[in-house]
Image 1 (tube, chains in turn purple, yellow):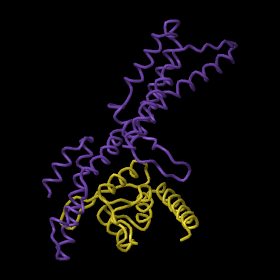
Image 2 (cartoon, one colour):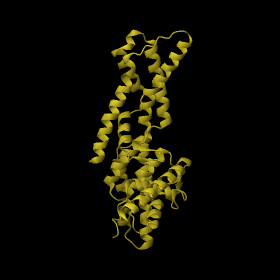
Image 3 (tube, one colour):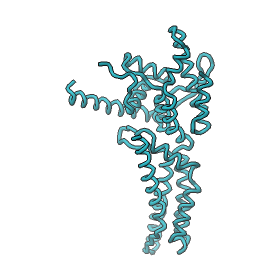
Image 4 (cartoon, chains in turn red, purple):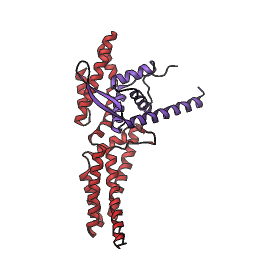
Length: 205
Length: 109
């Protein structure tokens, strides 16, 4: 049974460090079931197998949850703030070239470069995870991928608002809002829409 | 009529796990057996859903896991509620009791 569990865990599409956690838990679980069966005079192998249940169902559930352990929310916020600071300053200081398509592409490039690895996989796993039933509201869990996207998308606007205020105090009341500033929010919402719909179809299937 | 022993409403498992962990830290197998004992044979916890549910609660910060050793030396993960988890447990309990009350009145049980 131990070999079967090891093969199952090795075949899971989850981060390597999480495989060791899942393997230890499942081995412990099967061993507990075996011990209980021996005490009660039941077939230990059958008990261990029954205790683990449907491995394919477990595979689907684990592969939806485990990738989110790859990066913490704090880590995602830190990366998002770095990306946001670079985006805000580049667009503000970059001159006319940064106000059009070049600026928009640069914004997306910075966001992609600062993103946690395999961000899209992480986001898919978050969106496919079971709904959270909290005390305030229910909805999709806010995992590291969602945290990164919202931080990167929102924080530059805070920097720009701060710059507008500082410049207004200095007497400059001109406000310029380049189209490139909207490239990231539009892209993020488009990705969330597409992946959200795919996650819903996946859940219905 | 006794209900299907394999059926645990998806959201209910989360509330049940939080409620049992509110009584003390447990490892996965002990948690599953405690829930089944409490349900007096009306419930069978599918481990395929138990561990993902535990890991999801861990990700949310509702529970935390620590490594211990079983009596025979194998590695074991024990789960306990965090402060946020205690709040979530109360919220989940209230929510499911409200749902149960509503169903009772609607179905006239």
